[in-house]
Amino acid sequence: MTIELPNDEIRRQLRASEHEHAAAMPGWRRALTRVFDPASGATAEDRAQLLGLPARRAFLTGGAAVAAVGVLAACGGPPKEQVAVTGGIPPKTDSSTTTVPGSAEDDLVLLATAQSIEILAVDVYQKALDSGLLVTPAIAETARLFQRQHTEHGVALGDSLEQLDAEEVRAPNEYVNTNVIEPALETLTDEMSVVTLALAVENLAASTYVKAAGILTTPELREAIMSIGGVEARHMAVLRGVLGQVQVPGAFFRTGAAAPEKAFITP
Amino acid sequence: MSMRTRRLVDEVDEQHREGMRTIQDDLATLHLDGSDPALVASRRNFVRNLGLGAVAFGAVAVSGTALAQSVAAQTPTKVPDLPQADLQLVIFVQGLELAAAAGYQVAAGTKLLDSQALLAAQTFGRHHTEHAGALGGLIPKDQQVTMPNAAVVAAVVPELEAAETQTEVLEVMYGVEEGAAATYLRALGVVDWQVAGPAATILPIESQHAVVIGQLADLPESDWMPVFGDATAAFDPAGYPAG
Image (cartoon, rainbow over all chains, first blue to last red; front, top):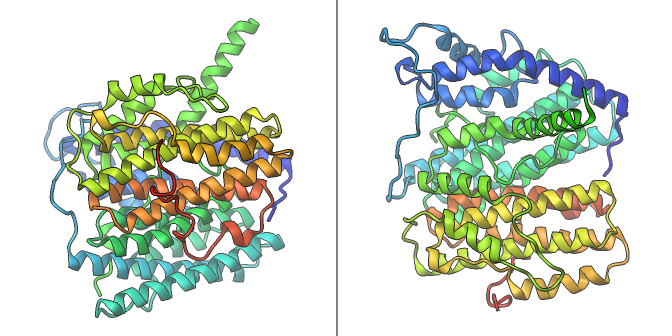
């Protein structure tokens, strides 16, 4: 499959991205400093959401993603105690443990959350196709392919839950849908904005599964989740290529965009 | 602005852009990655100090001196206490990563790759070297692998040297990438949680490599976009002894 994009359009998008990046960096640095100040009261989840923001920035606009706005608002407030902001990012504390991180209950939550994300992805691709904005036949066909694959992923995860005597999930992840997807859908303007949204959903899925692989309690479950996670990563590479981005930007897959705890589903 | 100054500015600008591509993810990993902090610190220090030009892989004879020095200098004093089977598997995969890096070196040396494919080969070769360095954080110092897996090199290099077109070169490396991804998937099905976390951060990258190489080689989409990952193509330690 080869996606042909006009060079002028690619250059225009790169310039727009540069300007956006330059405008965002001062505020980003201030937010980063505040949230990592021990006196800020920011939780680990707040930090996670903040660090995930730039990856979703292309489809988060003003008023979108309640969680994102809430984090930024908290970052703008005064510290809980009247102490000076330290400025630098504090050193990471030693949080190593020699005990297995997960539990049987966590396994069920992770699998249910994963299934809800797959259903969400199917839903998002359908909305993308229904939007009428995917005007390039090859891109629309890619969306249909990925949608079909996510459907099969969802079925497989449901089977895993059933084997563990847990109830499978039948609805899209409500937290992500309400706080991220629905606001983003209102801002879609063209084909590339739709592809950007798709990339963000794939990143959410892949990041969540990579993180889950380090928590799930059995090798069989880890292999199963990453038999899916690897494919979501492949989806990302394709979509990055469509967007004119570097398809494999780093040597290690980062999990900054993983689903937050508020999105977890308990079966 | 003089030509020299302009060139220096361009170099700094390019370094900045390279850094900014992954800064958000680098920060996320630094502050939120729940894996062993010694592993994280070791991996970042190793990557920072190894450099792109620190290791030179010849077409057949491969020198691991620079890599050995870097690994020795950066290996943390404390590594996880892994089950012996897991340790042996990690050691095998470290050699596999070095072999993949060596393969890309040879591929680039064929002079058959156009600029886009050459950039991919250089980048992905670098990634594999970084993977090998990161896996070193799981291996005691005296058991570190500093040479590419000899059997994998023996299987891959002759095919690369015999290739007459870019497609033929890329097809060989595509096989290596799919094999690497499959190897990590198979590993996840057997190893302890301490290896699973790092393995899970590398498998997606090998998968993405396979997509890019598959696209460049114009392979059928069904090859590089399966519904589920599969461990069938995994490199078997028994079949690929380190030598």
